[in-house]
Amino acid sequence: MSPSTLAIPPNQQQIAYYQHIPPQTLHDAYNMVADKVRVSVETAMPRAFFDVPAAAAAQFSTELGKNPKRPALDPPPPPIVRSNLEREIYRKADQLRARFPDLARTVKTLTSWDMLYYYFDGQDLQTEG
Image 1: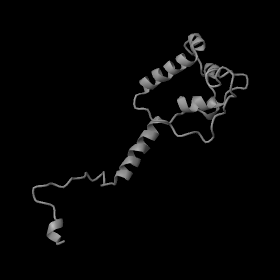
Image 2 (image 1 turned 180 degrees about the vertical axis):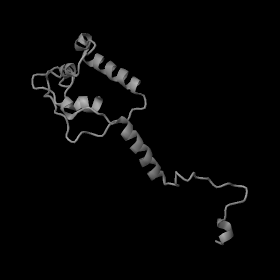
Image 3 (image 1 turned 60 degrees about the vertical axis):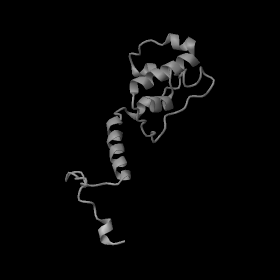
Image 4 (image 1 turned 180 degrees about the horizontal axis):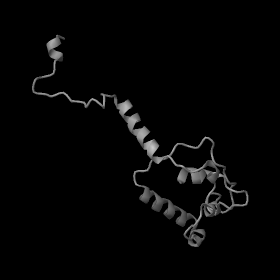
């Protein structure tokens, strides 16, 4: 191949990058976005919030007491990025209603974090939020 065959035709413009955003590979660009998303969804919840008291029932997580409660993971799992958080909440609620209809009917508006321990164990609180 001659150098002339590798030249860009005069009618095609090269992409101009702004000086504060250097050209990047797709992998680097993905990581840049992933880092920004990761920072935006980090929680300020103290680790102790995920430590479910021994007396707490964690009814949904234990399938009405059939399984043992699972402790919070340390280190915590990476956050799950959700593109439509509201839809995910409704999906999870529908799933729990279908699986545990009687228990789901007893759920009232929770007024404190401690009330979550009646329904969820440490791992579900960390991963499902």
